[in-house]
Every structure is written in C-alpha cells, then in structure tokens.
Image (cartoon, rainbow, N blue to C red; front, side, top):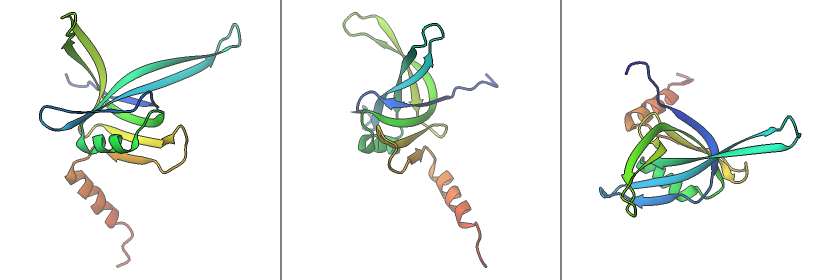
Length: 150
C-alpha cells in the first residue's frame, strides 16, 4: 500500500535483564521488556497519577544483540526506533492460537540508543544504528571531506 508507515519511537526503561536466545540458524536474538510511563495530576483530587505501558522489543541485528548483551541491564534507559509486528503462535498447553505484538529492531530503519547508565544520566550515550557497511563508509567519507586545509 503506497503512503503507509509502520514506525515506532519509544523512550523507556528495561523492566528486566535482556533475554538472549540462539535461533535455529545460529544467529542470536535479544528480547527486551520496555516500560514507558506517563504521569499527570488528577483534576478532582490533586493526586499524582501514573500509567505504565509495557512493550516487547525484539532485536535481530547481530551488532545490536552484542551491544544489548554487553551493556543493557534491568533499569537501563533506552531509545528505540522500530517496526510494529504481530506474530501468531500456538500455546503448547491449551493448543490455542496466541498473538504477540512486538517492536521489531531489524534493518536500516531501526535503531537502539542507550541513554545513560542504570537509573542514572551519567556516562556517554552510545548509539548503534543499523547501517550497512556502504552507509558507514559513506558517512566516514563525508566526515573526511570537511574543512581540508589544502
């Protein structure tokens, strides 16, 4: 369908340590549980209210899976850009079809950025975008062309 867009942008904190699994093809996949919250003041009572939404994040990019495995722990704040997807699976106990909606981090339109350390804003943010080797080479070439004195 022309003119459609499937893009999700989230900033939140991990509710658990990342889960890293090996797929049948030998590649790794990371699963994250991300909490996003909003807060407001109740107009009637003046009481502060908060609502938390939980999101399932699935990372297929090998480079990002390594970053997730090495650096992310429960409580870490991250920014993710990905694609919304729903997959169907069968519950082994009941035999019923089940559905899971997840944010997929895969391909050039996805990214994961670490926003500081565990429950703090210290440290240097690390960003690892999913770019091809050609895109990285082009970015590096563009940086080298700036302000050459000769």
